[in-house]
Length: 90
Image (tube, rainbow, N blue to C red; front, side, top):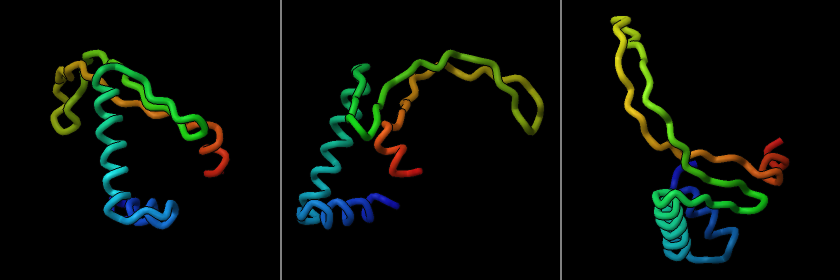
């Protein structure tokens, strides 16, 4: 499902117009990104939680040449599905 299909699904499920559904989805994405950038954790009961973890710098290997390369440290977004979402998928 791409963004346009998700907007259509939100609009049909909620009774919003497609324009309003797009605004709501864009607002959610913007608010989520802002909170994660500040290091906050976002928890949606039943759906799941988003958090940021620090991935340490490490040494990797170029698969074509076999030469060792340094991979820089970075922050990564993690998502852990809630129990209701897991139950609906299974």
